[in-house]
Amino acid sequence: METTSPVGPHGASDGVPAGGASPAAQQLSSARKAVDGYLRAAFPWYGLDEAFTGPRWLMQVGATADGTVEHGATGHGDQPSLLGEPGARDQRFAVVVTVASRPVRSSADGTGVLDASSVSTAAWLAGSGLLSRSWPNEMERNLREDWLDQQTALAWELADDLEAAVWSTLSLPVDGVPTDFHYRESDYGWVLAGPAQEGVLLGAYGHGLSAYGLGFSVIKDITEYDD
Image (cartoon, rainbow, N blue to C red; front, side):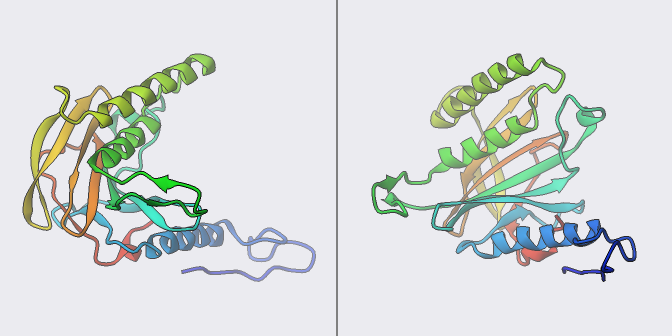
């Protein structure tokens, strides 16, 4: 995937800055690194099933200190920007979060244990993901930070209590099998979380694209997702 262009001894050649790759080559290199992170995972990745025909793109993976990949996200539709930016209200996207289902285990340095992953973990990752592109860009910086702290705490509380009234049940297919998800809506979009079929947990969030009627399936070739 990565391409390079020749560089002259004292300047750019063919539009390439001296001492570095072209912007296109840098973008391809970044895409390669993103894919590599997904390929290191010991679990399958999920995305929307073939009924979704729009753009698909990679986001990022989360890993422990020893490099073990724990979770990651794949995007579908418009790449989201902050709601404070022009046109953001018109964006339509859904992000699928795949989380490895793991028991309580030792930390990488052997000094403690890591919490077991759960549906609440998937709900938290999805909720915080929606929050990360929802904060009001037009708000004064200090107020914005206070708002983000408050909303982050609220998202964690909601994820930690999936039996609360704010959550409802939404049945969606996972690899063709009807699966019950915890589902909630907010002013900024929707969040859902539940189990998958391959020893992983799923979270998802979206805006402008209804969660009703979506389906999830294992991604056969993660390299087909464009970053």
